[in-house]
Image (cartoon, rainbow, N blue to C red; front, side):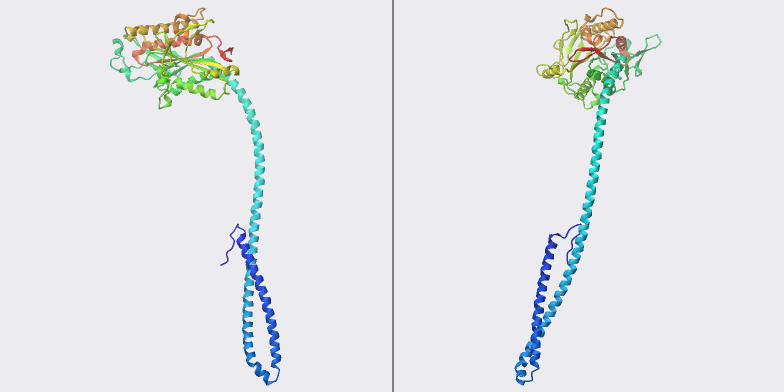
Length: 505
């Protein structure tokens, strides 16, 4: 069976070689036919000669050639028969070759037409692609122009956003007070808790609530007197069910102000056990001031603020911002640097002193600030880098001496704590009343916070209170402190322009 080329494929070198072989065979057969026809003619001449001889009448000739003629006649007849058979076979092969050549030509024409159609289709496709590419180039050029216009508009809107953001923060108050009410906890009913007999009867009674997101409602009751509800208004009040995420959402705008050129101070205040550490750090703090919390939603303000500052800086031009961060605890009228490390490199709270500079400002020498390297600071001076400071302060508990039942060294510590807080309350009152003299020097706490309260920083006070009846006195003291802080109206806040230089907003 003769093979044929498949659709979409040319005759190929095999068929071309086969065709050449058949054509060669055809030429050979044709030459053989010519030779045989020549021999046939010769035989016909001999036949005529023999027929001439046959006309002779001599008996000798007849006898002489009788035997020979019979033999040659038989030979001629055999040769002619063979020649006719060969010619017949050659003609059949020739017809077959012509038929195959015709079919092969038709196949070649069909394949050529198919290839030509494919080439035309490909050319048309390339033309369409070229047209599409030109259209895309035009669109890309238009998009680049649009992007440039949008970028310019974005820069203008960003400047407006900064102005509006800081105006909004200032309208809310450059000293902002938030209050967080923790839920009732198991230790509120723990046996052996040191409370007075009058308060034992009201253990685990919830008296402080978040009436709404700006109001704290406290139910005050005394034996023999009717219950009185008191309300306290703050910029934000968090109920016991609100998460760490929710708390930080209201802190984050201050960090934006930090990169807009303003110093920021976040201060936690409240009784021991009221949730300050949880709010500021989270449920667990390991050595080296690192956090080990499986659920990141439990992280407090300090780790979240660190992450947010790095995120905000990453969105700015490299090398354009210099941010210093300090974390301190004020306890027993002493200041402890929580970022300082011991000789083994572990986080270790080291006591620091507060001094007054020649310019009359308070400063804490040797206080640890987490920031860029000195080489980067030198580069910052050349780049006119914006330099700001984030201060995170944890105030010790606001225990009430008469109600806490403490004695000895604990009583002395509580007295120091309350003395520091009283000095802070005096400072807030003096500023609120716009007195000529503000008693910053009365405690290390007020000297530390002098720039944050009366200077050019934006201050957030995070009050933490317990809802339990047995902590009512401490909660009322904290709420009163927050109310006095909220009443403070400072002058125009200044932002840091270049490397800490103040610039009026």
